[in-house]
Length: 143
Length: 143
DNA sequence: TTTGATGTTGATAATTAATATCAATACCAT
DNA sequence: ATGGTATTGATATTAATTATCAACATCAAA
Image (cartoon, rainbow over all chains, first blue to last red; front, side):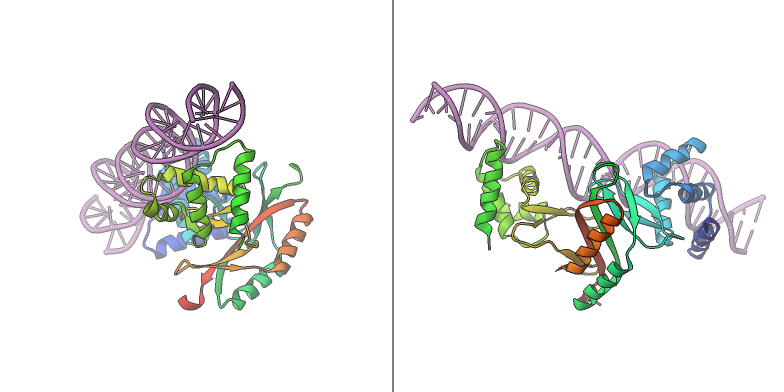
């Protein structure tokens, strides 16, 4: 795992922007990097509360945003639920199969689909920058 | 256009559910059916206000939800913006190219991609019900 | 047609998530 | 060590959606 590398990227970004390193920032980064996939602000806040009673919700939120800015994290929004954050560094681009019953996210990838998307964009004089593909249905366990 | 058919579906659904027909309900339905694509509650509310001063925001909202229930409308959420509703009846399934600059939605469709998505789902023991593909980038005019 | 049970409306309140504010504090270049 | 300033954490604000409820409208049955 490139967790060390991810930290480097974060701290380099901070320095470059003239921002500062703090105890909380580091805690949040580490907690995020070792947390499960598709975590919410609440999730991370609750994890951090256990070891840092004083940490604030807004601080967790702000720093997750910061991780998105520097390319370490991605925001994903599903339905009307709250925003989830997932690790981007060291994780290939992927799409999601989302179980409507248990809420499980399955990460998938298909090069062919990616290429067809690119073609589709070109055919519409559109310059694609990123995309989101979510397939909703029932997973193995739930059907 | 099957606007008449769409109305039939709506009223049949209402009757079937033991719901009632109202002046507002009909106004909202008709306004929605003749409105442009990807409309928000606000948009529709403002359109309706012109001909029915007394109509309530909540009523518009509730009835758009109802149209989703009966399969005439679909909710689409992009980024952190407000929910948009689009007509489903008489409109083939499609995906969206979304311009990050001007916000324009371009509707696209690719059978090959659809089939590959189905395969991808099967390969993961997943029963797909619906999906959402959004490609973000810059449209012809904006690049 | 009248009636009455009940679904609907419209105004407003409540809820929820994301973000802004700001005084106190912590960081770090000098 | 210190001073300028970014950060924190508590709280307020914003924004969208949904819930509440009394007044009203609908429609099936009489």
